Length: 356
Length: 274
Image 1: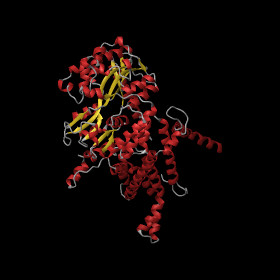
Image 2: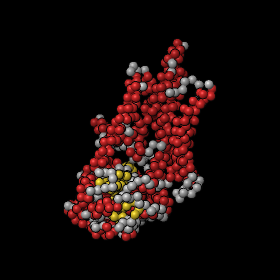
Image 3: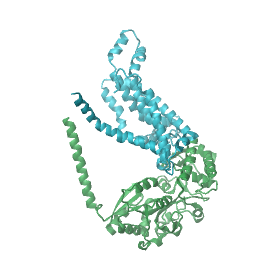
Image 4: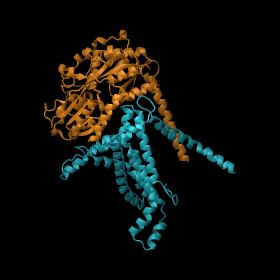
């Protein structure tokens, strides 16, 4: 009994000490009070050095909280009780948040770097006129292959994956919209198709791919590909960039017949409280030098034209991550579908997963 | 006197009652309630009709039950001899602690460790190459999924069986042997029936969580094994169809109740498992 009491008292003392010191730390780094910016971001999706630079230049301390899916972020902001000043949803989620009245319009008069952005990534259907969103990074969906077993140039198109040569060799990212989208494009359909027959056909097409599918996995796919677990994978360009950095035998292709173009965007949730800090940060991130530094750190493609020009030649001319104009013209942005349609996609996809 | 003790028992019931109401009854009621709502938040029975008319869901249910059964059987086959063996050892508390130790490690970490062992360049394949068989595809097979799930569940089966063995008075075994029963007969007629409550408790502790495994099905099974857990995760996280997700949850709860009834003590006499 005495030992138990000692243990409890000891634990309480440790907790108290930790709590006190973390509070002291927060105070000394200025993360409380009004001189802050609360950023709600994906994990590891901004160069930490830029945050320090931002604080040095403007005096605002950035508190970063992270999420791991658009849906998780949406639920958290919708439930309330949060004070995020900026969040970074993907394009279809911008439309969804807008419809749920979770966003504040951007005051364009306070943005100094708007002209730095490539018009190709502005004024898209998810947010006409960019009333609510400023592009952050963009990317594609494509094929990663390992040149140890796959000859470059043999897998350039979606339909190449269906070849019987690749039995049990392909890893797919576990995402209903993307994998169904891939099957749709391979059948020359829109990636936003909602016709049940068209989606049923896409499922049948995927079922035909099943013998070639080694696994349907999530984030782990990066680790597997880096370790040569499979020679082929379908994944997003951002994930591919990370794989390529870890394994020099890997290459990334965006099929020229079409694929998905995704754009992550900075938005201001209704709950935002630090208006001056928000615009200071948006302008800071639009600055070509900062955007270029961020793009080099993250490895994703930047929508900032001026920033792209500052990137090393080997990066900005890399067709894997900055595809040529023909391919770019064939890329499709996901529309925000109604819940019933999303369910349809997921039902067909689940049936495909059950199939193999 | 009578009223005093009665009042006292009521007083002790308060924390338990509160816990029960807040964390057992309320969540169950909420899941049940949610399961009657469609995507557009209208009251409906359609989630249930969809479930029972969909070949996909029925197949998935069958999958879940089948794999949970396999995992339970393999766990039992390994755990009973192990518990029996441990029980006869000298420093058994120490050996038992070693069995429990892995449960202190997060399940996700253990899964990732197995990825390292089973991958193409992993330890298992290095060994297979060494003995001349050559590397095999181990990850993303049903066998590897069952192997890892069994590994994770084993401590939860060993403990109740071990406790049941501990409760067993040596007098029974001595009596059985004195009356001329062979070792096998003693085990089959005396030890096993008397430790059956422990086995049943172990089955409950393993079968029920195995029904809704979902992390392992993706990490180790590569989504080649699809269970109801996968569908629930999808409905709550991707499609946000909480109604359908709750419906599957209700089905799982019903399945669990059935397992509890089947493995419960019909005749509550003799020692209960600790």
